[in-house]
Image: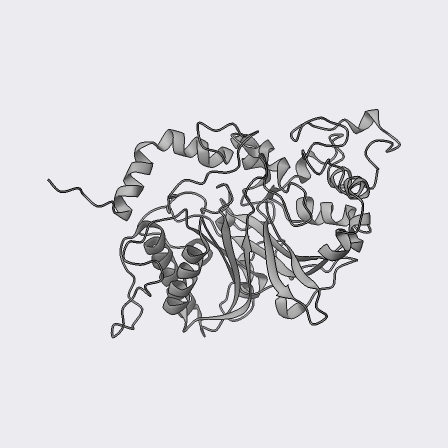
Length: 411
């Protein structure tokens, strides 16, 4: 009697068979049996490719990520459409294992061997977003640009390197392991080499929960605690994440989201010389537990009305400025999806590490931009320096086999 070898399609079928539990686990960021107070995200093996929205937005953060911004080199509208079709078919193949796309290089093997002979889904998601540059004169798309899409703002305290900002198209590639994400990047770049040229790139990772709860950033604090507000609350997600057509927005944006990426250097060597008490007062949370200084556990909602003068939580603390929890900022909340990065040392021998800040917004101006303006000159700016990234728009999802990413822009 022989034992059947597991296949990629079989794994996906098994995931589909337990769809109710899988969807619940994906939305809450934990396994069905796990207690989210004691355990970190447990991403499923595979996510669906087709749907009203792209994968890689609501799903729990995987352990590895690659962000790559491209300049489009295709010369006209028809070539752009073909590039988007190729991108769609390639991502479909990478995430479902079906329909190897033809890229005109039949003399060599399509697969690069990085993942061996059996390619498991490994939690891979590839989220495609477009930048303002796509909507210039080259492709005749000026009239269908998302209304708030533009070059990324440079706020006070930023030190933007414009060579590491913006772009025509962004890929956010996430997976449970780094080699899976890098494999996907190589396959995609091979298939689209004639039309996409890399502008900038940054690799990130998610730390495991230590000891539990939300993973930490490289300042040592839990990062993304507020995302729990979105877990299981579809009405909140519809109100704060997905963009709608109308009111100045073109109809095709329905189901997409404004996608912000900020590359933020953390001066960790200076930070490590600051007392824990002072660190906590700058952040507004207990470093060990993640609890607000005015609370006792990570997910407590602080009541700043009881501390009007900031005796417990300073009025300049990061979490208090970002969300005063008085009702005034309810519609300014955003879905976070950040990753740590570490890129060796700079020319001065200082550690080059920090955060790839990522968030998704229904309304770029009302949410990210408004909150960022409130954070200008917060005490934390002495220890961080945003230097790159961009504003993008995450395209609506692929609905069926005939659909392709970005199709609505050309209707």
